[in-house]
Figure 1 (tube, helix red, strand yellow):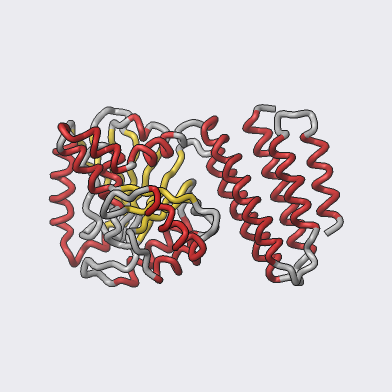
Figure 2: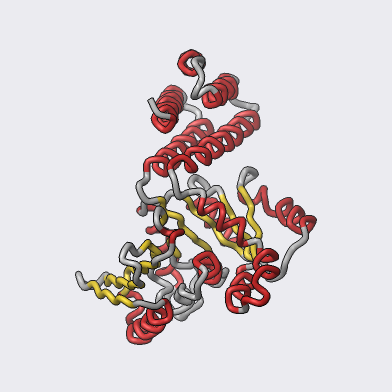
Length: 356
């Protein structure tokens, strides 16, 4: 078997074992909850390993700078302003194999689909402004989806999605935006979600994360209004980590500064480096191939198992001593994927779960 097949087999074994444990402990609500979360995380990891085109999703409250950040990542001022007519529609950025710029607009009120093709990015952006103006405030909910195809190498194996912001401030009904975002998060085939916040996350952002993203989002991007020192970043993480999740990955960027670097090439290097956008760009590039995703998947599952073990130890009042031992054996099996001891470790895991 190939390394990828071995890893998928490992995930299937883990899924079966956690599922069996959940069935055997149906009288323990807390155990059921954390086992169900692990099943969801295993599903997410399996899906992104098998994906032909990896889908990266950016989500967050309205006006946290998702479009500004996307412009910086794409290297062009191409992303439509989200606090406007496109606020209620997800925008998907895909690769254009023809080497041209294309906008595809779908409407929820009919089967109508409009396509516009251009040779230059500026022409596409101008057309997007015209389309937005034509839709107008009364018709903005009609556009259910906007697909933008770009001849950018970054998008060859990736689709990047800018989702509707929740708590809308553009004059539309706030609940409509929230429901559209929830529906997208619950029904779309997402492989990696980045939750974007500003310097000071609000209570509703934390609540939204816990309710809809905790099981599938491992990364938070803090879009700052100034360049933070390492000490300031550390202080920010200590302040908010346990309000969200103790095992999240935090990324600090200054998206506005990164866009200024794109506009003024004379200051490009200094501004771009200070913005920390290179970290996000390199992370997204690492999703491009199956081999790179496999490395990330192993890291992700290790982090999730660590979180799982800690939560098990925290439940002192429940007789679940077998769970941390089983997880320890699972970690050992993961490390031995390319080793002859792999099958032996899987058998040991089975024994632990039979005793649960």
